Length: 368
Image 1: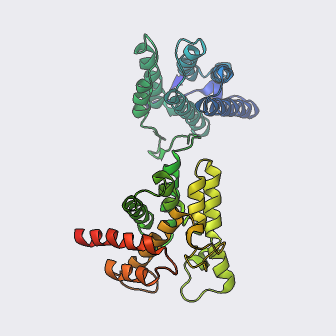
Image 2: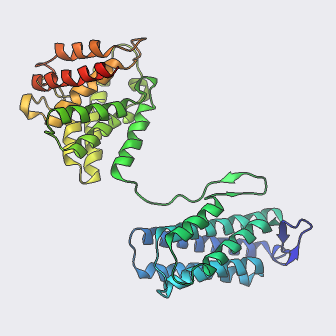
Image 3: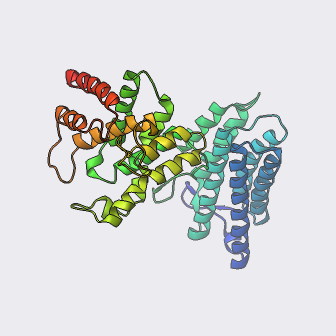
C-alpha cells in the first residue's frame, strides 16, 4: 500500500494492477456481503432471531476477508473494527438494538463508497477511512461494560448520517426498512393530497381540528383516535384519480364523477389494510352519504350513516366552502360557510349535529 502525494488520499497499485476479472469478482463478492448485512439488519429490526446475528457476523467477516485476499490492508483493519462490534453481540456480551444496526449499515455503505472511489479513480480519501476507524475504536473503548443506544446515536451523528465524496457531493445514507406510527404515516399521505392542489393548503389539518372540536362538543359519540384517522385519510383516495379530472375546471362528465366517487372506497380500503382502523374505514366510506339517502356510495340515510361520517361530512363541506377554490377567487367567511351548512340541514347533514356545529363556529368567530 503506497500513500499518495496528498496526505488525505491513499492508493494501492498492487490491487489496481490485478486483472479486471479479479477486481470485478471482488466487487461482486463485496456487494453480496453488503446486501446480506442489510438483509440481516432489517430482519433484526423486526425482531429477527439470533440466526441473523450469526449471518450478520459472517457477512462482516466476508467483507474483511475479501479485502485481505486482494491486499487492501487499510480496509482490512477498518473492517476488523466493525466486525468486533458484531462479534460482541454474537457472543451475547451486548444486546442488539436499532441504533447499532443503523450504524453498521452506514459503516458498510461508507466502505463501499471508498472502494468504488478507489477503483474508479485510483485513489480515495484516507481521512474518511480514518474517521470511521476512529469512531469504531472509540465505541470499543467507551463500552467497557455493554453497548448503549446513545453511543451509537452519537457515532451516527459524528458521521452526520451522510458522507461526502471527494467532490464535496453529499450522499444520503441507506433508507431503513421500517414502518412509522400509523397516524404519522396517515398524516404524510394527507399532506400529499393537500399538496396536489393550491386550493387544499393545510386542508387535512383543518379537518382534523374541527372534527375533534365537534366530537368533543357532542360529548364524544365517536372514538377520538378513529375519527382522527378518518379525518386524515378521508380524501387520500383522491390522489389516485387522474390529475386531469382532479384539477378539472368546469362541469364533469358522468364517468369523471364516478371516478371521483371511487375515492371513498380507496381510502376506506387503505385504512382496512392498516388492520386496527375499521371504524375509521367506515367513516371514510360513508362521509359522502347524505342524511336524506341521496349520497354515495351506498345511498344510506339518517342513522344508517356512521356518526363519525356525519361529523366528517359537515366539517369537510365547511372546509371546502371556506377555502379558496378554482371557481372562487376569495375565501368565504365562517358565517357564509355555516349558513350554507344550515341550508342543507336535514337533507345533506344530520340536523342535530348541525345545531351543535353552529356552537363550534360561534366560538371560532368569537376567537377571530
